[in-house]
Image (tube, rainbow, N blue to C red; front, side, top):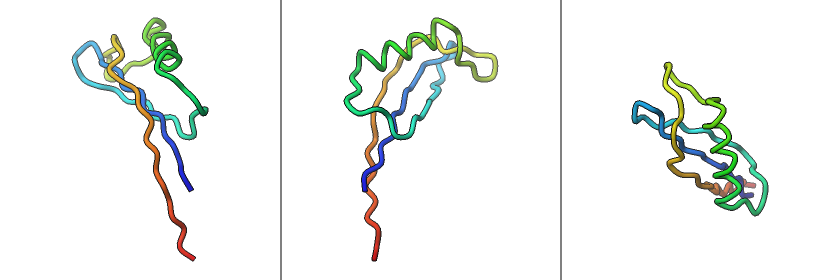
Amino acid sequence: MDEQTLTMVFTLDNGDNYNINVDFPKDNLNKATVDAVMQKFIDKRAITKDGHVAEAIKEAYIVTETKNILA
């Protein structure tokens, strides 16, 4: 059984990174769609950590984990 997690990585105004993980993302996501959502977070200043805000998109990726259930 495969499980996927979308990780969106933002760069904060102090140079640190901030990750948001989304379990079970929609199928067939593409870079343009994810970047548009990430940019909305940045534009609305919705992501902060210790007083620092997200100012740039660093990367986004999907991790697929396969679990083999033992019988």
